[in-house]
Length: 111
Length: 116
Image (cartoon, rainbow over all chains, first blue to last red; front, side, top):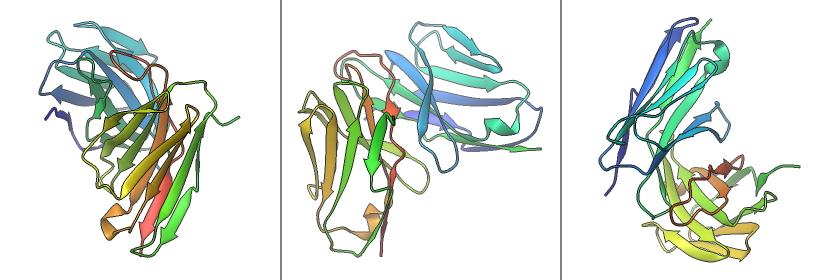
């Protein structure tokens, strides 16, 4: 079945360092969404990418959707302790209406 | 003014028992979901309802039975609980979740189910 793979599973960084998580799908996606889950919390929607090659920015966060619409990345510049949490990509294919979540990347930031 | 609310927040029970989790959303969305998040944080869709109609039913044991009395509510009943059912169960909602909808999903706070 369709799979969405996300790497790395864990990342420890020093505050101020950059961070990137990568997401790859076995099939072409109609769109990709990114969510953040703080420790003990629930997933919260960050952004959605729909177009091939799309790049969107939210302050220090940069989201990219690959040209083939099979991969995506989230890059955080100059991490802060408030960035701690698990970042999930979630892809949707065709008309199923089903979001397939990646395994998540858990980010730890050392002050 | 909570958008998606689940009860209970914590559920500790014995193996073999039957339990229910309730979910309500006040966002006016027409689609609701149940997800299971295991200890490795993997989020897996279980069910989805659009306007009270079941549209997604993943490979879930039939001990799990969802029920949607109206589009603002989606409950989950679990029979004969097993150790492997221990997880966090999240309810979520979105607008137009069926077909090609691109709307984001709004999650509840989760129900932490522990089976003894």
